[in-house]
Amino acid sequence: MTTARRTVLKVGALGALAAASGPRVTFAAEKTNVIIIGAGLAGLNAALILADQGANVTVLEANSRVGGRAFTADHVEGHPEFGASQIGPDYARVLDVCQRLNVKLAQGSNINAPYTFSIGGKLVKKEDWAASALNKTVGPERAILPSALAGFYYKKGMPFKAPDDWLEANAAQYDIAPGFWFKKLGASDEAMRLMNEGLIAPDLWNVSLLTLLQEEARSADIFGTNKPAPNGSTSDNKDKFEAMAQRSQRVVGGTSRLPETMAKALGDRVKLRKVVASIEMTEKKVTVRCLDGTSYTADYAISAVPFRPLNRISIDPPLQGAQSEAVRHMPYANNSQIHIRLKGTPFWEQDGMDASLWTDGALTIVRQPFGYDGSRDRLAVVNTGKKGDRIDQLPPKERGEFVMREIERLRPSTKGKMEVIGVHSWPQYQFVEGCRHSYSPGQVTRFAVDMIKPHGRLHFAGEHTRRLDVGMESAMESGERAAVEVVARFA
Image (cartoon, rainbow, N blue to C red):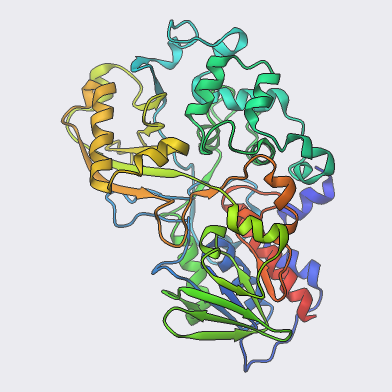
């Protein structure tokens, strides 16, 4: 990444806007200037930036809460994070907003006990993996834990030196299924199988390698995952989220406190339970109509919702070409969760294994979180990709019961020590419908550039429209970009 690009990433949101748009814009006070659909981090950041520039903004949120996928489950014991949790050291926009709005942060995020591995229903300790008879990988792969194999190959073959290289013309050669690329790099059949078991995307053949490489390049840039961790260890044998945990910060009291504070700063400009039915545009205005019969008129609108719910909204004039295709067909990945309370003697003390569990079976991972108060009384079971799709076919109660039976089968020491306290599926969560976007092979080349272009008076934000960043910062980045686009049209 060039010095100039790196500098842009580190300026605060308002500084970047001022640099892009020049002097403060004066707006007429008697009308709404911008309607923002969606009160996640993208929509709220766009609204704050526009309001700071003097615009009248109205934010319409379909749910009864703000935050989108930044969601602290305050209704579940222990207040687990259903969505965003980690704030990277280079999340400039998130850190800027937290500082300006006095949102308190603390070091470390989403820290869990180390993993035991379940391969074919048999348990193996991480330190025994390399020499285990259960390890059917070959050559250098044998030293790499199953959860870290994908990262091992991303580092081995990484073609990008900067996070925006994925948008260059010569990057189109990587808009393919990662399975082909891993095989070219020498991945064994067993390594391929194990990598497939831990994906957020459906599988190694139904996601674009190009977007995965962009995420890996940017994560390495932000978190320094090729560098020693604070305790002196390296990240080579950790999955991506484990490697980021110690270098991250978290919002004190839960991630939801950030969007809630942003919404509070906007006051009554944020309107909840406003399900948008249609967006109608003329040459001079945009009108947004809601299911409850209310309507809002403005100069411009920003859609800051994922494409799945956007596809349910009538847009006139309709989207065209690649932009229309992206909204209709963009895949979204699964993240289905079961949260469990632990009872009695810690099961890991009984069986002598590390408390978290990575499996090649029906479950993806079973995390045993370290509470920030020192407690270790919960499990967070996360099922991703097709594993999540399969388990989501069960009703929530049966889903929890199935997960507990499966954990008991793999680790008998847990029997009678678990109680389900929360169930959550992002694809089944209304008005979101997925944990994140997931380009299919060939879709980055077809969609990425055109799908974020303004359509008449309608602009687009959301993590699916990111250019450089990842995680919470990608949502903030997209909201900033959309706000800058709108301010430029008022100038």
